[in-house]
Amino acid sequence: LNLESLDAPVVVFNAYKLSYRNDGREIYGLNTLLDAFFRLEVALTLIILIPQLSIAEQATLLARIDAEPRQFNRGRVHVISRPDIEGWKVISKANLFVRPTITDGDALSVREALYFGVPCICSDCTIRPDGVVLFKTGDAADLAQKIVATLKSAHSHTPEAIKANPAFKFYSAYLSLFEVPNG
Image (cartoon, rainbow, N blue to C red; front, side, top):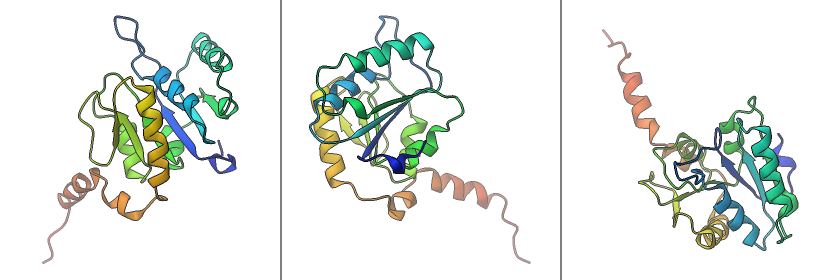
């Protein structure tokens, strides 16, 4: 997957597999993301990365995209369902990472985006790490506005963003456990 070859800023969505609540609602907010993406009148590429997507789920998702009446970015949606692709490598090269979940914990993919300095937009369904842009859970119009605003204000991946990685202090403390005293 060569993101550099794509002709528009790349927005990445990542989930290991689709999951559903007891009431049947899809947890990762993929429909909210698609609704927001298709509202946009600015050229963007959307990578939907779901390694464990069944053939039936993939067919349903592709049919949903093909049936979209708003045409502007429809040809720029790429569904990737291959277990050999490492999500962090795709996230690290993106212009924007989006996590539109309706329920969540401390998502590794959000931490990965922040580590690589990739701007990150998340639903406000839970407490999120510093540095993410929040949008109202389930609100496609708010997400669409945040996507445009975040891309306008985003800078390229900066070393400052990597230094702000919340795992750095943990890693430094861990390394200090193995330091050999001089003497």
